[in-house]
Length: 392
Length: 184
Image 1 (spheres, one colour):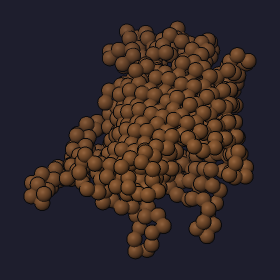
Image 2 (cartoon, rainbow over the protein chains, first blue to last red):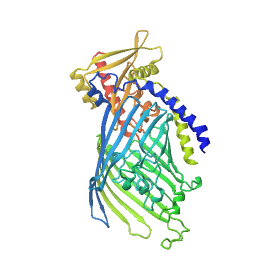
Image 3 (cartoon, rainbow over the protein chains, first blue to last red):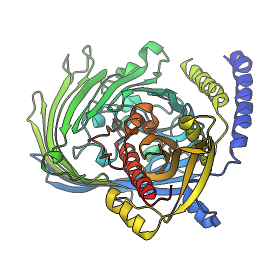
Image 4 (cartoon, chains in turn red, orange):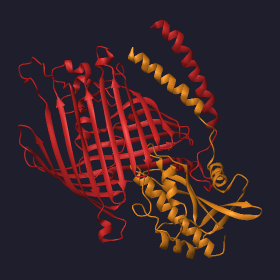
């Protein structure tokens, strides 16, 4: 392995460094400009022209039928801060406060949701490095509350795809040709032994050592990187189909026992009709040797919404009744010998969500929905939710 | 073994990626390229800065529900001394970033094309695709130019699609007002 490193990797690294220098240096002399008629400006004005602030937030009321009191929350309040060093180089970031506040280290969460340096060479290739959103499904990379109609994100995008799933890494993106987009990243991997039948959320590293962070040890564990990729096809304006894959080698370094995840998604919009769906499978690989880790999961949903506003008025606002049907299964090993596991312990969750979303403006949304989740052998979970969302 | 392959993959990505990088073009150069693409490589290009007086500003705002500034740069394409096309560069706000685009017109006021010159959001950018842009051709200030009506948004890029559509409506109305005022 050492020999192959010296023979193959070092010349390649050197060559990539040279090619980087050759192509990057000339572009740095080009000034960014927001439009051709921008007036020559002071350095402060120039800085402000190149720096963009935005954000989004949501305010929710959730009333479950049992197990908890009704709750009011601001689940997310996010600030974007982007800076353009030139028309190619940019820093893009999202900083978020989850669940209102963090007090003496307890309660919500304050963290970076994205923070990366982006070199957008042209429409065919860009390169980004930093805290990146894993390109998986619909919601993970497009999660502003005005882009989906339910108060909470689909269950599939919480339990199967652990949105907002971000990890530190590097990769490339662009259009292979018009209507065919790719993203390819190498990032730190999931702590697959932390996955449970409740979902993948506990396995995320998010660029941090979490509770173990100290002055002496900080940052994620980069010893088990993962590869993630997404291909998207847009055959015409109203249709977008995506295929995403995530592969992470397991503890045994046996490729056939790697953690593997694959998701297909589609969005179809035609005038007032909006249809979308996601579906995917997970194989936890050799992490399932841990008794609490499910062997895998599969699931998906289909959602339809229809803008009925044109039936009543010519206003720009939108009124969208919607319904979503979801099914998620987590499977445990059937050959387990642990006494507290039955031999075949699939956990199936079937959820129906129906509701109404009103968008008085494109960037403001008011939501109301009712969700019923059926889990075999358990009482139905029912929840009524109200939400307000904004993005700017 | 797999980790090593991934390291190699990163390097291959970088190697394949960087040579593809084209030289940066300024927005003015991109605007000229769009004018030549639509009105022919032989077309002679000129530019003129026109003032937009307050009555015209309010007329544009009334008809398009969008604000315009107090001046506009109009790109012109000439062939044998005769104007064969126009272009106006503008910025609209996408999700959080401005999108710089050009609306190109035939002398009769019909839209010849809409082209995205700079897209800055981390995701999206599909409003630059032919399948979206072709919907604008032949439309004018009197067209509805509304997403969900005569313009189909790009699935998953609704905000950018709406931004470009609002922008094209505003610029088409401005172009029409300039024509009616005898300034073009």
